[in-house]
Length: 254
Image (cartoon, rainbow, N blue to C red; front, side, top):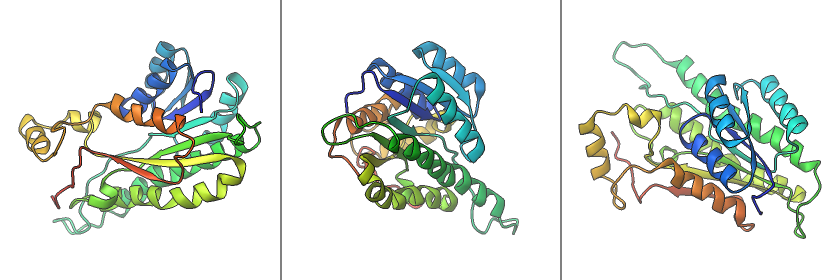
């Protein structure tokens, strides 16, 4: 798909991987709707790239539906939808205080997995009703963000790994179902990247993490994630697959 002239929608677009993705798509000529839980963050990025910013909680179906309606009214049908919204949580199944962190588990799945599904479903409905873009009958592409924790979940990441594993598991069946509408579904599983979560790491912890990265031996840059988004959008045969982007790292148990 040629990105220039298309409408794109990026959740979590106010920071980190989502911000880099929104900026890169805009540089390639897309008109971008930046969705973020923070209204200020969404507006900041949108103003800088000539898009529109919308405050939305992706785990709220009504809010997501309203956001898609606004995008359709102001920009048009989004043909590129990238789910970057998510939360990173850490907590043991059996913490030392004996409490069971069930609420944290539920919230993690609700934002990361359920939120991604809500956005995917609204994106699919919008794209399915649009005209094909090419001779193949392509109508759009949806890219969800998983994590290498899907396969390499560490101690304390049961909720996070489960939420990202769910994203991986729904990729192929979603791609197969939506194929008849000309809609592709992909997932990216990033490793260690420069985000708000990694920014708070002590220098010694960061050094230790980078030492375990085969090559390149550094934390990934958000624009490198955005580069992969761009390549997925442009390559019509990428469908129903999960791509790790991680310097060949395999996370240790803790």
